[in-house]
Length: 152
Image 1 (cartoon, one colour):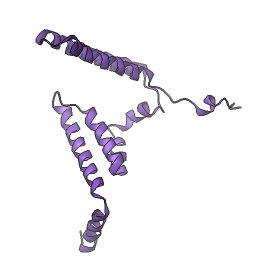
Image 2: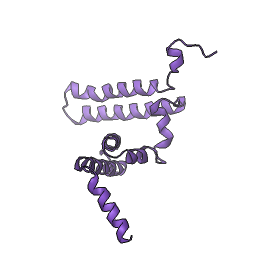
Image 3: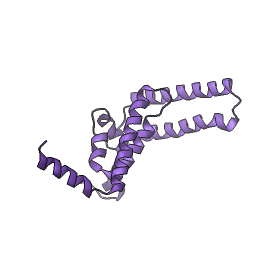
């Protein structure tokens, strides 16, 4: 990198607000923790990716685009933004795996500790919300049909 290019990069960095730099750095940290969560049992991945997306939206939109449009997440974007229908087989498998792990978690909690009943009810409550969300993933409603306009 020559001296003039280096100077332009430094000048550009100095114009960015400190708040945006801190939010972008926190987003990068969240992506790192999410990557670590893929291989470390018990460390969540999804929560950190959601946090990173939020932080990148507030600080550096091109980092958000890069995060959600990478080859690992891009195939699933349509399911979340409503432009694609999640295949029935994928819904069934997703819910089956989710409920299997919820059942295992509750069983481990019930057998291995003296957890109160309300604690034992939290994983199934979360799974019910997840089941509802997965079941309703589908194509977005056509705005012309909502307003009563005819497509003829």
